Amino acid sequence: MKIWYESILVAMVVLTGYLVIVIDRHLPRLSANVEEVQASFNLLQEKFDKQTELLTKLQADISKLGKDSAPPKPPQEDKGKIAVDSLRTSVKNLSDADAKKQQGDINAAVDVLKSVKKTLWQAGDTLPTYQADLRALMGPLDLIIGKWNQGDKTVDTSKISLAIKTVLQKIDSKFDT
Image 1: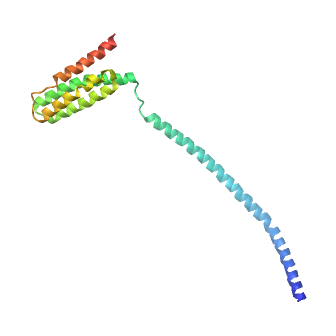
Image 2 (image 1 turned 90 degrees about the vertical axis):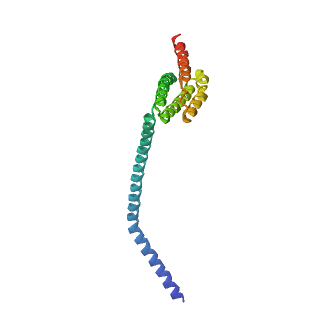
Image 3 (image 1 turned 45 degrees about the vertical axis):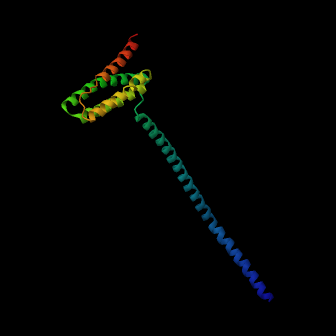
């Protein structure tokens, strides 16, 4: 049995020696492969970093373009001027609504009154000093719309036009002084 153990021991020493020689031969190749993989990884990491940087710049440019494309809000003075101009247009629109009513086009006349109502409401938001005066016209406008829808052509918008003109005179006198 001793011979058998010696044979196994010799075989193990020979096998270990063989493995050491094989590993020594392949170790430089493995090291070179590891270095190549590491270099490839570093190259990919650099490309990824560059692409990330470009993507970040692109996102910043896109958000800047998004902000630039939104129309700038007009200053409060411009909003006031726009509101006053819309009030002046509303007086003309009320006359147009009366004319359409006289021609028998009640639906178109009612649509004009509804748009005037919306304009007056928005002007009241923009011109808080005159908001109460403008909002007070909502009820009479609703009454006229209701009567016109019922076919009553005797009601007109002259009182509302006069009230809007009065508000416009107040606004004009405020800016004249």
